[in-house]
Image (cartoon, rainbow, N blue to C red):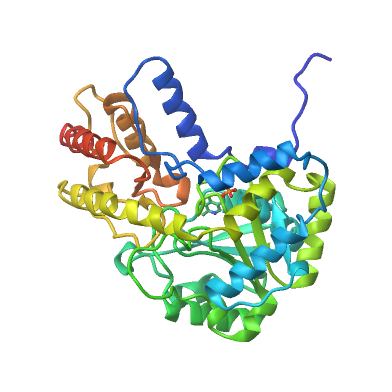
Amino acid sequence: MDAPVELAARVKEIKASPTLAVDAKAKALKAEGADVLNFSVGEPDFDTPAHVREAGKEAIDQGFTRYTPVPGILPLRQAVCDRMVADHGWHYQPDQIQVSCGGKHGLYNMAQALFGPGDEVLVPAPYWVSYPPIIQLAGATPVIVPLDEKSDFDLDPAVLARYATAKTRGIILNSPSNPTGSVLSARALAAIGELALERGWVVISDDIYDTIVYGGGKLPHILDVDPRLAQRTLILNGVSKSFAMTGWRIGYTAGPKHIIAAMNKIQSQATSNPSSVAQKAALAALTGPQDFPRAMRDAFLPRLDFIIGALTAIPGVSCVRPRGAFYVFPNVSAYFGKKSSSGKVINDSVSLADYLLEEALLATVPGAAFGADQFIRFSFATSMEILEAGMQRLAKALAGLS
Ligand SMILES: *Cc1c(COP(=O)(O)O)cnc(C)c1O
């Protein structure tokens, strides 16, 4: 037999992360010498703070290089509990915390522990690219609930009710959202909480951007809707975005003890503990000064003002102003159906993103990757210089379509 080895059915069902794919293509063009401006990256353009890097180096030098407990070292889980109380007033014990190999892995562990064939999980769209495949890899079915740009991508309770069935097991929330930067209103959260309690759903709240928020006031949160929801809510967070630590791979989940225990069982057979060295660095991040995320937010704000102004000045482009995170998600569908001077037809977000990359050397992520084809995503976690040059190229490239 010399036919290629057959792959498992589950892997044929899913696609590789499209955001990482665009990033790879942009980097390849750049390596060939092309002057690519990259707006596709989903990470802060800051270095990990010095005291956190030092803690990582110390961990290496002190020989903290062996296996740790599967759910993470106790001081780190305690530090997560302390932050939850200090930042939100939520009370967790260390056995209600799992530290995982990045936030994405926490979601993977949750899905493996909670969902299986026949289960439906509600995913509001635009969604983060990894939610549907993570649900599918557990054998369950993602059910996409559309959000409307006209209501700032808030969830409409009436729409939610239409997508809920007897098979619904839970819902994934992401506020502030990647890719829209929108936040869920107290009204939407109240409706979700009511349905969750009535029908026994689990609520997964991906709070990874909760330190990068523009404008004052506490964000509405599902846990503040009804204290009973703590029994059926998993909070996902991590240091990737808040402390510019994407490469260290540390995320964490807080939730009911029996679910965390099930997730630990999965993790124990899949990865064992997250990196010991990275755990020490994350401990320094969570227990040290907390001004870094705020300084990053303050640096992002003028960039946000600039990019929103530049985008909405382009004919036909609309863009909801994000309330958190570091992405804008403009609606570019007015350009669908047009043609470039070289004859390339733009018919959807993928062909537009391709056109922008090939002809304007602008790397963006097509909205189709987030379940919203009328849009494209720009990250503004990049320098003002690049933002200015990028927006000029964008305006010119779009003006070149007819
Ligand atoms: C970045 C991100 C995460 C977590 O990323 P990790 O690098 O795995 O920690 C989770 N959710 C969303 C929406 C994100 O953008």
